[in-house]
Image (cartoon, rainbow, N blue to C red; front, side):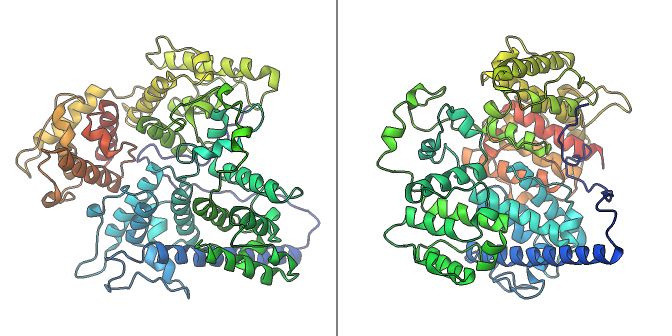
Length: 571
């Protein structure tokens, strides 16, 4: 029997991740006494609390530095946001209303949240409902930028569930730190290619995997005996940091820390070197010694972003045969991801399957993850006896993968997809035809959020249009509600119909004094930013970008309206 490696379910009703019930796992040594079990539990609790404190300190210091110039956060309102105090629970209190988190999202991925949509305190603090709205916006925005937010509800954030808050903060910080750790932003990473490896395979590596390769690349230059596989046990003695810093900044660092036998003194020296290089210390000596994975990963990412040091003398020699790789781009900007591809990738990752999708055309080529998605589109449609489960033996990889991909095509046909000219080998070979399949899968998933009673029949786009127009025509609270003919209607590019529909679904939510006439492209872009942010605020998980609306991308516009209908019809 095949078991999908899927994290807890996504709620189809709202698109938000919901809290699942956890069953306590039974097991463990049967001979252990009750007293011993209590001691083990106490030790685990102490260690967990220590990690919470370590991460809290690291994250708040990052936020204090990154947002120190924000005019709103540095003013005195009911509580002072910045600087966040390290003592007590000031950090967790500041996260409850969602304002600080929204600004952190914009720091990591600029323009993700239109801050006009936020609820701000005026004459009194925000009430619980207004904080929930902000947190709804935060979580939906996190999903839209590719964060993995599992089993976290807006209520968890407002109620101050520490682990939930820390997980969200980490995902947002990680999104910013890892944004440039890819071949599109750093073409020099091609030097990390291994023998026989394609560029596509390298692009499919997670930022963490690329960082490990990057560290090992520099270690090999200065130290033959040291290589790492992780960012916890392998870095705890500080040797890796010492060699790495000397490799990337030989003029400003040295190997003196290795002479220190006291680990804390050694780490102090290392972190002092990092500060001299203007690398913000994300870790303390204790974090390195204890091997805190998140904090050490963040610190390595900071070092990379400051000193990638990928221009080395022997680079050309190592890449003599690069033109013979499976993929090559003459512009040196390998595989610049399109907006459409990014939207599909973020949607797939929002379903919380493993592994995380870093590069569509490589990560989906064996068909296995696509089959998992089909099982979500229509539970039970996938006969798990007919699938091949990776990893495959080298000689069977192509055959088994194409079999899976052919099965995907047949499943698409069962769901009524138009797949003319698309075959399993096209998916395996990384053809752009994959995007047509993904679009229809994403469309089917979105429309299937609304069904006819207990039947399996999903809505059609025409029915979404009819529902939206009916709402717009029937509402009498505001004059001039705009209807539309179809999702290609050019009037949709100013976002007015979307904004009106949001205001109908949640009356009074749109601040029309902040909406532009929408005659120029600049006005349209501002409206689209506000519109998509407001959609997320009322509970719609949308993956469209403002440019999609302004340019009249009918596919993404259709999905936005379908998501709004999903929210409005469930109220």
